[in-house]
Length: 470
Image (cartoon, rainbow, N blue to C red; front, side):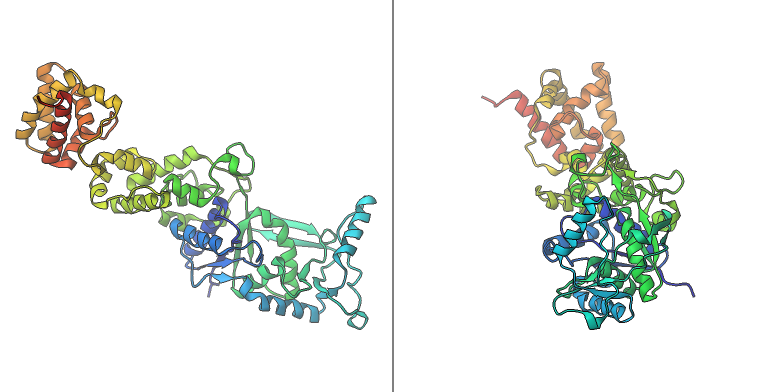
């Protein structure tokens, strides 16, 4: 029977959910879900001074918005401190760890002397081989008794075999003098106890892997499959930062990119399946594999994201778009979006839109009430000949069959009679119906608004053009 795949996402709740963290979560989610495995969420909150409840909530909300569900309850690393300490003492009893009574001042003095002599500042504790009988009273830490000779090899599914000389690694602290575990110990114990089979994370953790592998070896635990993925860089090839624009997942949500587009785009940042750029969630789950992850850093390209976003909007269910637009409005403090008005308009505006704000902007004609405020540029189309054409068209519209063919025939006949192109007729209609120069098709708008509303808006515009009666 094949082993069940178990992956995890283990963010620190010290700030917003970074776009790179969201991609790491997505890769873990895709790998597990595509193989019928489990995707677990662990909040690494051992840094109590920097961890906040607000940041933890932001992680939950960000993953939920992105559509990444996790199995079971999210766990807290801090809540497992007793288990971490238990393992440290087991290692102590088995001779794989030792008590160190060196003070911070002594360690710093050692390092200053080493720097002055041009030697390695890697601390070698004088307590490594001192037995319990010779231990003094006072506080101590528990350190890993790391091998001094040979090498530690991390077999990485992305980076290949990564070899580290053991004389380049120190005896790291496992348990502090106050009895609290270090991150390096806690992450290994938690991954082992949670049954994590694949550790998929950013390659900024690659240096940690050799140290963590030594803990696995000391405890005689099977190591997980390691997969360290390259970080995300900006378009200039430098590590992604605020100078490149949005770096938090929430910021991309506020820009109005729908979640399916973000999932698709993040999946393609550092991973590929042939030349496929646009794909569905089902395809991503089926295709995703560690072998498709490259070694080079991925580059964030907003133009590609916008293009993918447009493709996803064009195939998304209209109801789903309405819900996403409503969420965006709440998220950004915009006026509430009336679903009943937006839904009929989505179908005629989504193909030309790349973001949710563009959907709402193009559908504005369906969301506003009379009287329509006419923008200055559009008002020009209602003056002179434009206004006269509208006035002449109105009685024909009263009698028209309210279908696309019927409306196109009435408007086209008048344009032909006047020797005008259809554009000359459409301009004042756009202004009257939407108050703008750039709108969906005038026929789409009239069909959606209906006969009464369309004629009322046209009457408003022609009355305004003529001025108040005397």
